[in-house]
Length: 445
Image (cartoon, rainbow, N blue to C red):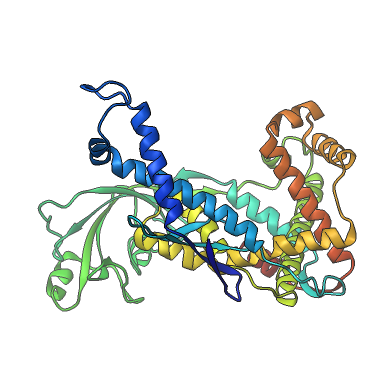
């Protein structure tokens, strides 16, 4: 058996194997004879069907199975001979065989990367943080009051904060009906120009039951924009201006006009937010605690992301492209992506998937170097902590994570957190303060 091994700098392997003609020829003859002895073909005694007929009827399948078996055996021998350990799927790219000719095939696969742990202590990390002031707490409670507001109908002209339930359909610039235009019912909040840029300006002051014709500039893709100076126009004015610009005229009937009713900051509102709270002071303490917790979680996510990024940047090593693409391909297939969507998914997520794969290998290297592991006792303590936090029994937590895969993933997360904690404890961390609102926007963004 002749073997040729080519390994790229990224540790992708191309293995070319050639088996001398004698072996596949002998194996095929043996396979045909075995089939002939076992064949029970109508019109012939068992094992007595002519070989020519067997080759004609069943030859393609017998040859295919025999060549596949030979290829699999030869590949395993070649891997042992060359001391190669595939780290992903093995693709048989090319297979050649002819009567009394050698069997040749090419196999492609990635080798497991060999991470070089050069740096994992003393990383210089910068993360942002935020303080929570009394003004921040008051602002959050004010936002809560607005979120818990309920709508009530009014008969007076719609103010700038009104919510309108409308019937809308396109009409001629004169206000006349257009045949075939469907009437749509919409609920809009003034301030978002839902019907097109400039539409809200024309709806302020509308009353329940009133009908208006408004105009918004349109393009080939539909109603998209309008001059900021758009004003309410009469049907007569619309008719005079018709054809001068690309506008769409809409007939808007105000079915209902509502405005939000903001709750007073009192004990009734506090109980509505959280029945466990009894006073405004309780709500302020609770809000401060939640904001501090959110800041802490956001800072922790930043810290972990910074650790992963720096570990990957400061500990470079080759990663086979086949491993990353193979992992993404499996995900894309589960999502039933095909064609251009399949290719776009792999291209779009390649860098992120490669970074995550590098981190996993480096994480394991750090754990080996520092003897980090999760004992059964520590894992049991984590389950107990989870039970106390959720108010469940430890038996209920175990039931929720029943199944080997779920428990393994939970243990894996705990293991990763332990490695991240070790790196963080041995890093130089600079914390920069920023405004709470900016911090929350950054974390949410």
